[in-house]
Length: 154
Image 1 (cartoon, rainbow, N blue to C red):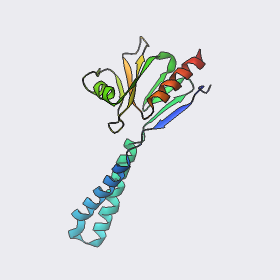
Image 2 (cartoon, one colour; image 1 turned 45 degrees about the horizontal axis):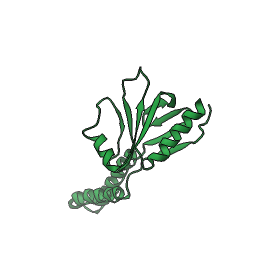
Image 3 (spheres, helix red, strand yellow; image 1 turned 60 degrees about the horizontal axis):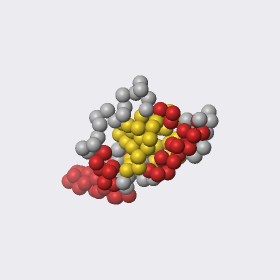
Image 4 (tube, rainbow, N blue to C red; image 1 turned 180 degrees about the vertical axis):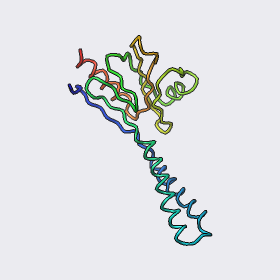
């Protein structure tokens, strides 16, 4: 497999505040189990915190990568040759494309806590997906990496 000219990898991690919320979920479970004694309370604290942390971690485990000649975004894998123009979306435009400009056929790798995004057209006539909407903290860098991978393929 040929490596792309400009490799790119980004993990869409959850914000730090979500880890505090995970701990507070554990505290809630501990308070619920407090009438049953100290041991159930500690079990609720540990179990509730662990369960909430697993959920937060799983939600933040999505990655966007360019591997070889393919863009891998979450569960989607598409060759860069099937991608068209990229549009860097500032927070206002990203919000618009998440709401009233959105197409129901589009692939969305959406994370509401990431304000910026990249919209990439899909040019493959066999694919009904009109575009990819990718929440990313570095949309310009991702767009440049897609262009570099497309140029390396040509």
